[in-house]
Amino acid sequence: MLALVLGVGIIALGHFMKVPWSARFYMLGLLYVAVMALVLVLPEGAFLRRALGGSAEPWIVLGLLVVCFVAYRAVLGKVRRHAVQVQTERGDAPPSQHGAPFNDDELERYARHITLPEIGGPGQHALKEAKVLVVGAGGLGAPILLYLGAAGIGRLGIIDADTVALSNLARQVIHTDGRQDMPKVFSAQAAIAERNPFVDIRPYNRLLDEEIAPKLFAEYDLILDGTDTFAARAMVNRAAVQVRKPLISGAISAWEGQVTIYDPAQNAPCMACIFPVAPDPNQVRTCAETGVIGALPGIIGTMMAAEAIKEITASGRGLRGRMLIYDALHADARTMNVARARDCPVCGNV
Image (cartoon, rainbow, N blue to C red; front, side, top):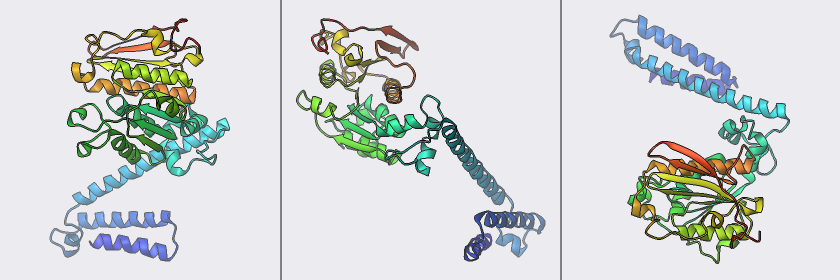
């Protein structure tokens, strides 16, 4: 308490006398050195030593914590300065959603993106300007939404009619035990908002159907499909083709998953080009029916989020015309080429 009173007194006196913070921290450092000297030099039982805690161990721990905090802040400051330097050298200082420079929180938050040459300031600005709709807030939607929200997508739409159930929590990492029975879109909204307050989150707590899908998709730049039935994926594909929006599609079952980009407007196939006929219901079952390893939706959903970020920032090589297939059981990943079908009944006229 004695040291605390002295420390508060130094800060208050410095404020009253308008002493710079650097000088105040220097004085606090001298106070710390004096306290350490006293507890080490004074004999046990001395009143002043007892008033300062009686031993040096707590003060050593405090000093280490302060050093760790200062080092952490120094590393963050270095990253931030490097991000600014990179953008200054490129002549493309990162603007915000409204054209002004990013504020301090945004710059620090997105510093690792901004320092990537493939993204940089313009790419991060593109992410803030992007409007992305995620269909489904379940196994695939959970990691997609977490990572796109953290990446700073400007408008992030979520459509799902389901509620959070206990059986979801082993794999749908965006939801929590305390949000059971809450609509998934609102649970996801809460999780994203806690992580990034700069995202405009649009929850749609309803079933996506043939009537509203084209109208809703037209309001967004990019669609990500996290549904878990063939019929739902086929409907999402038809709506995306109708409004000429690129569709990042993922599917999982048991230990295997796949990711691709359907985009006939850019000469990539649509889902109906590759899967023109619905499979026999006995051959294709939902995750609830077949089971699924809990980490698999995270792997495939994160791949989908990465493809979305690449798509928005025009980085790297995307999965148009290719399908990535991942086998978690045997730790195997491969890609295969896929092409448009000229006689496709869904995208043949696009």
